[in-house]
Image 1 (cartoon, rainbow, N blue to C red):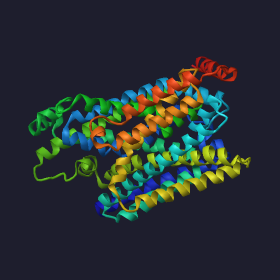
Image 2 (tube, one colour):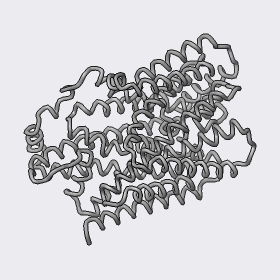
Image 3 (cartoon, helix red, strand yellow):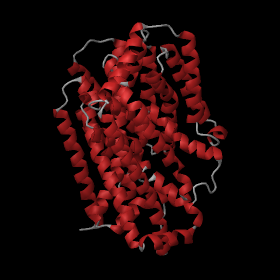
Image 4 (cartoon, helix red, strand yellow):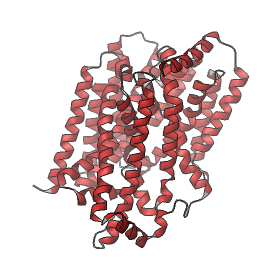
Length: 494
């Protein structure tokens, strides 16, 4: 049996497992809260790994190792910023958001939480939030589908469009039927696969490159500056890289996990698991790149055409083709976990935050679950249309969308949890100001090349939200009660 056949068998087994999990979750989904938020029933391990897997995408296994391989540890500042941001997100946002969304009318989406928290009768805040999520995530999902198509093209030589359809159909199937539970359970499995792969590849690589001392010597022979964190970096460049961590506070597909965990108490265990997973996975990705540098230095006849494939190529060199197929499945897992998480959040925005807010329908839960599934299908098909031309510029929207969510939602989420005097008007103006700032800054090359657009977007949103809220603040006994009830629930359950 050929190596490609072994690897294809691994991929098929992986995809069948994802579909089985989708079927299992489908059997446990009975109402809208189940479909959109898993009935707030997630344990700490599933919450932690599903948040991590939906966050990292293919960047963890391809983008980061490729950057480190090409330029060295100077490219690790993004990983440092993301780790700090993720830790603060778990520490500061997770407990209070879980508590507050329960206290404030049992909110099941970020837009509905903001509306309920700020008692916005106009519904403008909820509708604006839903539109931002819908627009950004449609392109975000599309970029993931592009990555899936490219995966099958580069790994098996399959036509790009065939690969695009395979990835899309599997993800759509388990997301459409199983909803949030399917997304979370599959993300948990995908997180485990990614984690194990990122440990096994660098460890196996060290064995074939002669151990730590010889591997280090080979890397230094290529370029001793690869071990330097600041060589060739500018201050604004480091700030831009670390600032990626600011994006966590406003990513709907990540923070929605905090709303779904069983209790506030379990956020502490989830934080430890999630940050442990993240640190070890990032170190594995960095080590994979450095081991790759040593391997190709020692084996002059071998050539790495694309630095971003260093993880895949090393896996194929080190392991039996079937195990190498599991390494490939890890890359696919990273891509698919992000697509599915974004699809379910987009579906919830379309049904829970736009359809229900505008139409004001009082249909049954069964009807809303059906509409949620239709929304997943519609958004998926639109994303496939955008991904069909294999337009590489779509992939650039990932960093832009990350900044957009971080700049539009991040400061508002933080203030909503820690500042009682935040107002609906302040949140709406701040959200719009942050999104516009990111949009303008990110599309002016001279500005975006100097400083990542999330920095001005986040600061402008924070400033505008604070000023407008101070001007428009009026005492509201219901808001005050919920604010202190949420704090008490955190204290009680911790």
